[in-house]
Image 1 (cartoon, helix red, strand yellow):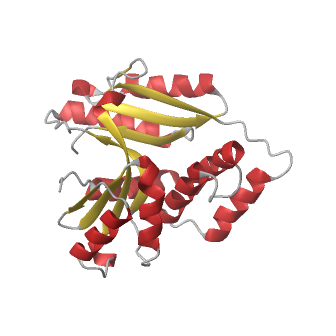
Image 2: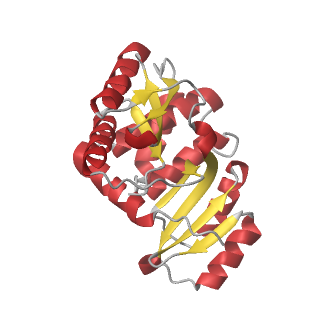
Length: 242
């Protein structure tokens, strides 16, 4: 099985984002609102909403908070006017970066994202300029310390449920799926009372790039920090091997 788990980076990123912003529930709340607006309030008939709920639970969002968000978005006169916009560009040394945003003011967001790239010595590119270097996959990360299931049993459970790949690292298990199979695999794991460090449909780099120049690392971190601080930014993907 492939060995591209980024457990430590994912855990660090979650802790960093939570500490810096304290807004992870707000970010997911926006995603819930848009998913409900686009496909209705029933996750059984709204695949996007089911994905967002899985992400919410992986981030320990309480069930009542999730349900309130769904009901609010489904209510009469709900003023949800967010727009999905994806930006692609390059950081120092050609590091590929994808920025997913959810905004009610695309001019503001475009200026802020461009500024984050520029201040870190990077540049915005055209749509598609780096996305071909990533694969969209469902990704579930399970911390070994919280998992009572044997690795072989977990692998068989995951593959039987439709997972495309399973890898065991020093401190975690990583399960990859095709986007359409994510929910079935997630549900099978939840049925076994497993908990997750991360569970979402994401962008996985096909290859990773190392940076050795300290100034380049400093510049890239500046771009990533500015993007993390932006309330319109929902997710940032890059191929830097931190």
